Length: 271
Ligand SMILES: Nc1ncnc2c1ncn2[C@@H]1O[C@H](COP(=O)(O)OP(=O)(O)OP(=O)(O)O)[C@@H](O)[C@H]1O
Ligand SMILES: [Mg+2]
Image 1 (cartoon, rainbow, N blue to C red):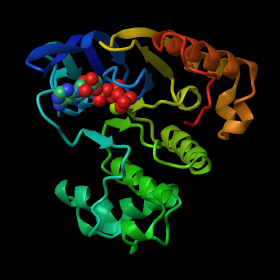
Image 2 (image 1 turned 90 degrees about the horizontal axis):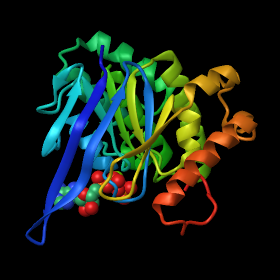
Image 3 (image 1 turned 180 degrees about the vertical axis):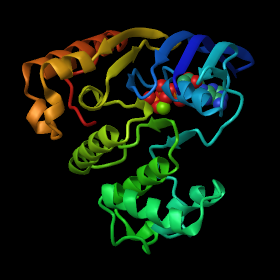
């Protein structure tokens, strides 16, 4: 059971000698093996929330628990994928994925097996001996995701993992992540600026208010996805024009727009 529980979690940072409230009493729960996306205006504290789950940051009041234990430090049960691919530039694709598996003490044969499995899923077979600089951005991010999944963490934390990719690569990555998440369900917290991406990927979408960030609303996607049978589709163009998809997307977008004071133009999604 690897659920995530935020209970009255607040965070202040010092700015110009004053305490600046960044997160205001955050309460939410991510169930074991649930995929939750967080959307919210820039600076509302999304990354700070994720860092608190990763054990890289701590609440000034309230608690953040993973598997019912207060998070006190990073751990191998939680893997993080950042926007910038964060691979070791001096290691090959194979070695990048192998690094964490070695640290876990897995034997060579088992490491090889796991690496082959995730390279195949992420469409990277044949790239084992390449170095990151020899790969496109999309390929590098696939390596970062393969590396995170290969560690077999119970919790995956992804902070705008596709933010730096071009629109077409981004769609391919979203579809690969959907496939991977179905074969290999994990507890996932996924931050994005793309409303469309959140509706396509997540079981639930959490909308945050502008700073100081709090939870504005939680939108259930999974029930509608099951009801409307999106599960049988893994391509975004097969669902993005469905009435139920458009309805959810519009609802979340309007909710976000209120936080921007209504100043934002119509969604140019993927951005
Ligand atoms: N280590 C830090 N020291 C001081 N202030 C910080 C620190 N980390 C974050 N902040 C502040 O906390 C607020 C929230 O930052 P955070 O990065 O969590 O926002 P975000 O929602 O992820 O934004 P974006 O969508 O732009 O990535 C910002 O005002 C930021 O300046
Ligand atoms: Mg951020």
